[in-house]
Amino acid sequence: MKTYTYTTTTHVPAAKLFRAIADIANWPKWDSDLESTQHNGGLEAGARFMLKPKGGPKVKMEIIEAIAPTHFDDLAHLPLAKMRTSHHFAQSAGQTRIDVKIEVWGCLSFFWDRVVARQQAASTPEQTRRFIAYAEAQP
Image (tube, rainbow, N blue to C red; front, side, top):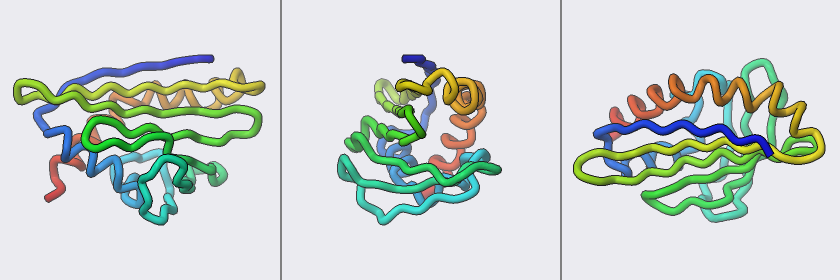
């Protein structure tokens, strides 16, 4: 299994960050790598959704865990591999720590690491900045 992590802090409250990450239909507004998403609105573990990266095929996704306001974990079902992306929010003393973790495993994990996970990990700092700005602008 290959794992990538990124941590930053913000003054945006964890509850506001969670609302933004749970709004899957609007991910393309802050994630410049996405063309579109399709989601029925359910946030329970096992809920399915679809996303389409720019220039790529649709990817079947699943919510692993969504517990307001502390974390949101999703799972990409890739051919012969899985990729989990976790967003954890910890609020303390007027600051919220954001921990992002990307993990890829399975028979073709070496391929998906090279094609998807590395690029996603490399873009995480900028993507997180856009996510924070999006969450902050929401009512």
